View 1 (cartoon, one colour):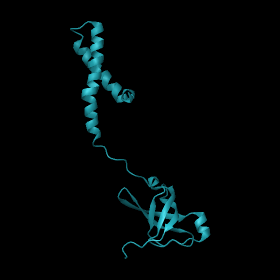
View 2 (cartoon, rainbow, N blue to C red):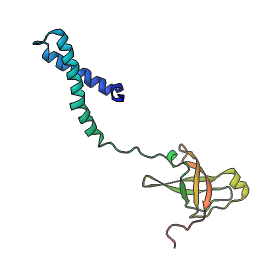
View 3 (tube, rainbow, N blue to C red):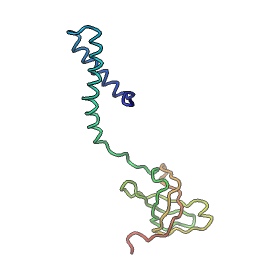
Length: 147
C-alpha cells in the first residue's frame, strides 16, 4: 500500500493508463476504455516500471559515513595529549582512517587524566565543521607500529 503513495508509482500508473487509454479508445466504448486504461496503468507499473526500478536500485551504494557517525565510537590517540588535554586522534570511518583534533572533556582535564600515544579514547561530542571532537579516556593501548 505504501507504494501507492510514491510519486513514481502515481506517475507510472497515470502514464501507463494514458497510453493504454489512447490505444484502445478507437475500438472500445467509454466506460470500458476507462476500466481498461486503469487496469493497463496498474499493469504498466507492476510489470514494467517496478521491476526496472528495483533492478536499477541494486546498484545504489551505501551512504557515506560522516564524522558525526563516529559519536560514541572508540578512537586511538596518535599523539600524547598536551597539558591542556589536546591531542591528535584517529578513527576508522567505513574503512578510511580519519585524523582529527581530540580534546579531553572538562571533568577529565580537572582530574588530571593523561592520554598517551596509542591509548583508546571514546568520542563524546563531534564538531564536524572544525574537524575536532571531545573525547574521554577508555584505556591504555600500545602505539601503532610497536610491539
